Length: 509
Image (tube, rainbow, N blue to C red):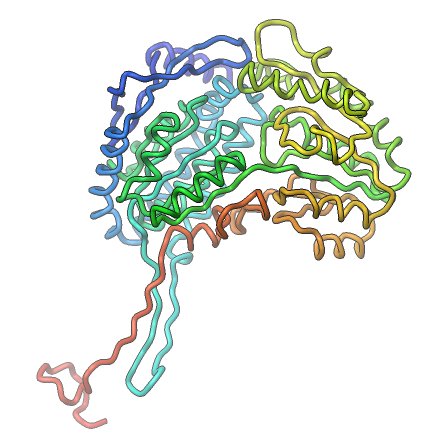
């Protein structure tokens, strides 16, 4: 991994500036606008990224539109063959992809490689595209009439992706979209865009035709240009709830399909009969993995009955074992946050929590590594209540809040009244309680003794309530449906006996 990072550093020095990828090649931005890219473990700017203008977005869309005319005609067997090659290439180069994540996002090696692996699973799912696009056929629906359905690609589609998973979330979008026969324009986060440009290089190396996959970097100017472009048929988005709502309302008002996944406040219920060691291990891993910067992180642990004190003690015993530091050190288990401003905002919840009546069990500012990196150590708040900011807001950092309730019914009520409905977990030995919970909880993804219930690639990912705008989840079967539209054909052919062409049929029926 060290050698890979050295190669990445050399590549970064050569680049200095991160450009767009349009029509199968790097294209330097000409808008005159750029943004900084930091190494968050060092706390210094290492690169700058071009910000696209409306004209540059149009250039990428036109390249995609031109490529679509031929890409949609490529046979399913050829697309499948190509995706097997893509899957193998991304697998072989996974450490190089992961190194970009460590360099620009700050993920530790294990988190970065895990991100790439979860993205690879969706690419593997897309390898089954001949089966995934099978239609239905009804022979003799009426006398001499057959009816069948087919699914066809939309055209040019776009993805707008967040900083926290700069490799995986784009894979969740472009893999099914391109496999279905669409062409793709990706607008990654401007905070860590290099993985997306490297993705474009790998896809070209694998044999994907020029123009099928394009990358345009930028800010709100680029986002709005995508939402308003008449030749973009659909937009996929993952990010915060306010932006998801904006993406959905703007995109749909322009006649586009939109899948917009928003924020989260994921709960983990710990019932009195739970395996305490399992629950504590799970909570620590789920709350602090990737520095808590993931939409499936456990943010609020709800302890039921008298297990709270024992749970807090078990978590406290584990906190000093979480090694925080630069992701380049394989011994570290948690890296920095994405920016200094975000780190400070996350840390502010420790102060507001104490002011509002919570107990600060662990203050990550006291255990953060020294230096200029954007670090915050693992933090724990106890006796949090639903009125507190630490409970109401999506913190998106390594702060775990513990909410104490008396009964199972109180816990379910708490979860269901929360405005978010992304993921939730329950820890219990009682199968009946678990089954009842999955039946009545108003959340899109549920874990039973599983703290981060991200669905496998052949199911779809997405939440409820303010965690989703629209009705389409991402990847899996819903992803295939989102990136295609159905067509039903009703056909009747003349009686073969009346044909003037000798088809070899007998002349009597």
